[in-house]
Image (cartoon, rainbow, N blue to C red; front, side):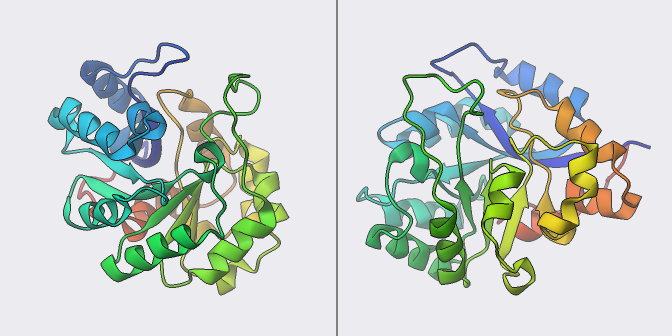
Length: 267
């Protein structure tokens, strides 16, 4: 029986670079085809607007009818004055799963004082933080978008400095995770999703050499990216059904605020 998944990395909404199927009905169709129970996503309005919170508000209104299964990230630029308001909003709004940081596109450093202030607020409010390496796979990134992935040493220092906050790494390639050279077992607050990591059967079979399976999350980047590759790679991997279910279903509610374990795990 197929496992119904929790996808921790939808990328949806109006995109300035190409058309993607992000209407309400199209997302319901995606849910059925991809076998999703719940999902956490970011809209391009939130990722690309100068005022990221106004983009989030538009997405929450536009997708209000999907609130029973789609949650959103509150993408924040820590240099903006609404930063603390955004963290607080994430703490109290059941539609928001976590704060999302995108330093490579918004152009700030992870060791900036404003980032530490945001992380302190997140720790105080008990809000998880998603660190997104990129929106665009390097192979298809628009040439006029200046996207710079944070340096491995900066990411490693960030993770070690903020051990009091649950942090999920998103849209990192496996080679970039290896380059961090961290003892992941000493960082129990850190999770990783597969969004844009190009997972296949071979790489997922070797996952334990890169990152603990117990803190691995299922993220596809759909509908901006095609969802099936991530799912087929995981389903074909030589790991137990219990481990696959943990990655695809059980780990997400542990890592993110407001997600609850559905009672019906399978179809």
